Amino acid sequence: MSASADAALPDAEALLAALAERMAGAVARDAAFVGIYSGGAWLAERLAEMLPGEHPLGFVDVAYYRDDFKRKGLKANTKRTELPFDVEGASIVLVDDVLYTGRSVRAAINELFDFGRPDRVELAVLVDRGGRELPIEATYAGARLAVARDLSIVLARGEGGTLSLGVEPA
Amino acid sequence: MTARAATAPPPPPGARPRHPQLNAEGKLTHLLTLEGLPAEAIEGILDAAEPFVSIGEREVKKVPLLRGKTIFNLFFESSTRTRTTFEIAAKRLSADVVNLNIGVSSTSKGETLLDTIDNLCAMNADVFVVRHGQSGAPHLIARHLVATGRHHVHVINAGDGRHAHPSQGLLDLYTIRHYKRDFRALSVVIVGDVLHSRVARSLIHGLTTLGAPDVRVVGPATLLPPFVESLGVRPFHDMRAGLDGCDVVVMLRLQSERMRGALLPSSGEYFKHYGLTAEKLARAKPDAIVMHPGPMNRGVEIDSPVADGERSVILPQVTFGIAVRMAVMSTIAGN
Image (cartoon, rainbow over all chains, first blue to last red; front, top):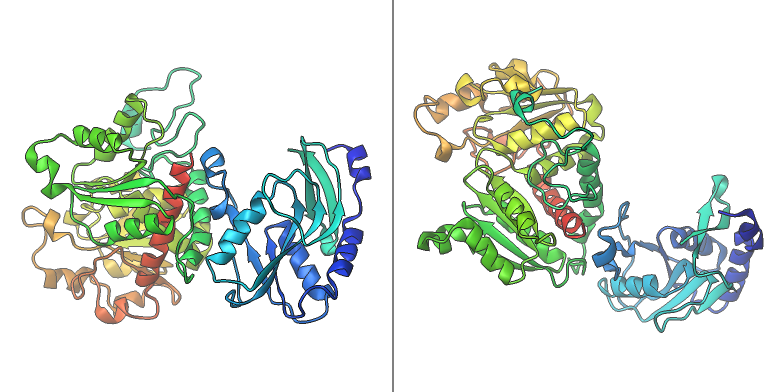
């Protein structure tokens, strides 16, 4: 991890505030927020507190729906997918930290539909870094960033719950 | 250590001895036995099983992880529960499952085991789940697959002779961990027909690998293997003394179909001394759990009020068994 690359990254808390502002008024007051583990789960929790209305919370781990099992095998530390509300007919906002190829979002949408037929699925991300390999776009994004292909953007949660962005070699 | 370890050929100098279940990268590619399997590999499967439990609670009890894989259940010995739970596990992973009761098909026409395997490989098998009356049959198949360069085909031992039943051992370990959390403080007692029990052998290896400090076996001298202490367990012939202060009681089925000669006077006599009753269970800790791999012989090794009582976790074992087998299949198929 290089300090100069970190310095170029925006503050995650400021991006979250910008994202919440874009979503306020546009998102249904009863929309469920479903975070994709792990970064998206932290963001979904925060957004449910920040935005007006009653937002049921859910979490998905897309490990069983990924398209790279053949190359990478079973992912370690997979978490339980928890959707403690009726997906059938729900208005859902999928939440993720970084939107890149779109493959995780594809997997998450497939998983949602194994629980029912939502009325509407939107996508909120903290960072859209371009580089899509599938026809998937964010409904709401905190910021759009250009990042070198050999780097991953990683969201971290520190003591007290403060979010921050860093980069790692891909 | 055991006598076997002393007679095993020494590894070439500098070479790290490789377990036959592990591939060149040291990852689990077959599940043949828990003996000698590193603690990390066992814990990896127990951890992987945890989120699979919730798949069974969904409306659509299926994930697409092994879509397009073909899994052959090869049962040379009869089994209902193990075969069914492997089949459900494979189907919940979206694999295609083919059940073969070999006892009544090819081998009765004279085909050898490895010819059967070659034929099924020609049908593009990905995983074999094998139960066989002969100890070592799954090893033989795994070695054959390696020798013929079929590194993408995997074997799971679903019980071989008196040797091992590793997926049962793993589901027992999962159940114990679910209720008791930390193995390093536990007293676990295995009661009954340890001599004929591959379930007991697999569980003992798993428990000692994960650091359980006190593993005991209880049974009449005729049903405990000679030198059972060499497995790292303490033998008891008196059940009450054996259960004293324990956290987990694992009852074994009296396997009358495997018994030759007069090992026991009668099943009534057996129940009197080694059947688990509420009175005998009172010697265990108040929060001790009662397990049984099934099928149970009520009134032989376990009394109905105990089998159906609040400390019995016999039915959760079955549910966890599906998740553990999903974890085994997806771990080996991905390595």
